[in-house]
Structure formats: structure tokens, C-alpha cells
Length: 482
Image (cartoon, rainbow, N blue to C red; front, side):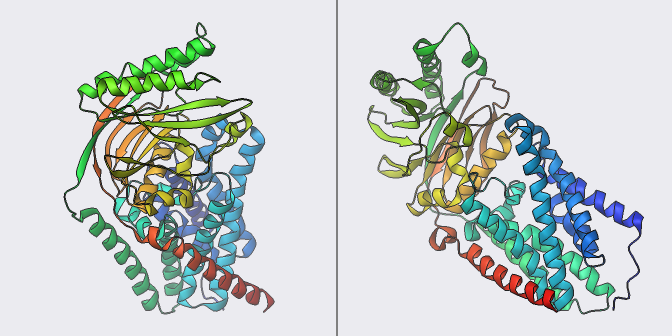
């Protein structure tokens, strides 16, 4: 029987507010803070070991709900109200059930190794959502850590699932250590394991960030985003507007070439190529590439009878069409607009070196983008289109695919971020078009592929967690029977 005193109401309320505020800051689309997530769950997990199941559910649900409210303004801009309520309430519900399950196992078996139950449950649930939901990895809490580069490097070994495991393991261990100490139970093994896991993860991150490799070739790239207001010019409609938009983009190529650009990357859905006009627009881009002796990556909406395709044309300096990539992963709005998805990655050779092109939401899907890493892609070019508020987050989500796959990336987003980053997820150059303002950006990127364990072994860490999750559920069932 526990010899702990009951939790005071004041302490309970303080811990609840602390957790909720830390989660709110962690999930914020503007704060970009990584550290609050490491401490947010501590009071909730600690209280769960001292309270009844009903109270545990209440505080876990309330605290996590407070944190998830930070996304409400963003959801209001993209979702109808029913979906807003669903997403806002569903995640706290799942979190609460995971806390209750971990609590039951930790209190029943009392062994230090039960500290792994909560991170295993969270990591496995995320992995299942990656494989089954339309948004891929978009809901992962691992993306809160994008500014914490040593921890980000764990993704090269385990995928982002390893980051999710770390940021849930640490607070669980702290809460369990405090509880066991107060219960006069041994904390030696638990403390050693906690310190060991953190030291190994951080050491790997520091080593990878500071590793040196053979001198790699560099490539100067350029990007442009035009003023969003031109898309709403009511004086231009139909094919006249498409031609007008194409010319606005192409006028900037010369300026970027003056800055040294060898490849110019345009954003997603620059304009619509209607039936019968593809060859004309294609020739216009080829002529521009030849005239400036520059590569061009142009992303357009291409009409095909009664449906559309989201296409990225990769045009070489000599005007040759190196790739005609069709976006594979579409968001719900594109499906409603009669767009059809492609099937294959957009790999091509640039001066004999393997590179790739993908489009916006493709980067949310870990298993799909791993095909580029497995093919030894050196640089990935990504035309994109964000939604003002999520520009930072969506650009960093794409960078995680680079860490997992071992390649650099050039990403140009309308109403988002224009970024150039390396294989470690370091931002080398960045410009902001969140408000739809016109932007030019140019910079160098190394052309080099770095092999990763995640590319070689795939989802090994997720499968390991899935097995551990099954064991945990079996222990939970046994605990409930007794």
C-alpha cells in the first residue's frame, strides 16, 4: 500500500496548467520551441501514479487539450467546424487512454522496465497513423524538435519514430524516478538507463553534425515566388491569365542567373496548362532554359480531359526534358478538384548525378520518400504550396525526410518558406513568402548522398516498438484480469 500523501488540489492545478502551457508552446505554429515537450508530460505522468484512473483520464485529457488549442486558428482556416472539433478532441482522447494504459502496467508490475510502456504506445500509435491516414506523418510530435539538431539526427537511424520515442521516454522516466524515490524503491537501474539512452542519442547527433566527408561538388540554385495578388487579378482569366503568370515567373530567371543560379526552382501550381497548350508552354520554358543556359523545374496543373494532374517538369540547360513528374500524394482538396495521383518517384540525372523531384505533400510520407534515399538521390527539388500559417512547420517536416534519406533539399513554397538545407536538416538559406510577398532566393547546396541506417533497414525501429506494444497490451490484459 502506498505511503504517499494525497495530491493537493493546488499542486494538481499547478501541474495541469504547467503541462498544458508547455504543450501549447510546443505545438504552436509560431513559437518553434523544442524544449517544452520534454517536460510537459512530467506532472501528468507523475500524478497518474498517485491518482485513480478516472482522475488520471481527466487531467491527461484536459492538459493535452489545452496544448492542442494552439492549432485551432490554423484548423479554422482549412477545416469545417465538425472536423475542427474532431481533430481537437481526438488527440487528447488517444493521449489519455495511453496514459491510463501505461499507469496500469507501471503500478501493477512495479519494475523499472515498465518506463518504456508509454513511449512504446505513443510511438506505435504514430506509426500506425503514418501507414493508414491520408496525411501521412503530419501529426507526429517529432516535428516539434526540428530546431534541436542533435536529436533530429536520430531520424537517420530510426526515422522520426525514434524522436517521438525519446521525447516521451524522458518525461516518463523523470516522473517514474520521482515516484519510485518517494516510495522508497530503487531508482539506480532506472537512472542509469535514462542517462544512457540520452547520452547515446546526443552523442550520435553531435558526431553526425560534425562528421567530415570527401569534398563534394556544389550547385548554385535559385528560387522565385511572385506576389500572390496577381493570382486574383480579375482582369485576366483563362488562358490569358495562364500565359501572364508563366511570363511573370520566367522574367525572374535572368536575374537569378546573374546571381549564379545553375538551376531555377519554381513553386507548386504556377498556372494551369489547359488541353492542347502543353507543347506551347513547354517550348517556352525550354527556350528560356537554352537562352540562359540554366536548368528549370516548373510545377503546373495540367488538364487531361475531365481530370487534372499536378506535374513538375525538369528541363536541362540544353532544353531537354529530364523528368515529367506527377505528384503522388494529394491532399483532400485536390481530390475534390478532380486531380489524379501519380505512382513513381521523380528521379533523373543531372550532369550524370542522380537527383530527384517531389511535390509538396509527397514529403509528408516517410515510406514513399525513402525510395529517393534508397536510390542514392543527392539533391531533392520540391515545388510546394503552403497555407500561410504552416510555412515553417511544413518546410521542416520536409527536412526530416532529408535526415532520414541522407540528401539535401531545395524547396520553394508559395505562401510558405523557400529553403535550402543539407542532409542533417541544417537550414543553409531561407526566405519567407508566408504572406504571399514576392521573393528571390539563391544559394549553394552540396551534391552528395549520405547513406543512412533508416534507408538500409527501413522501419526496423517502428516494428520493434510494435512488438513491444503487443507485449504491453498482453500485460495490460493480464493486469486487468487480476
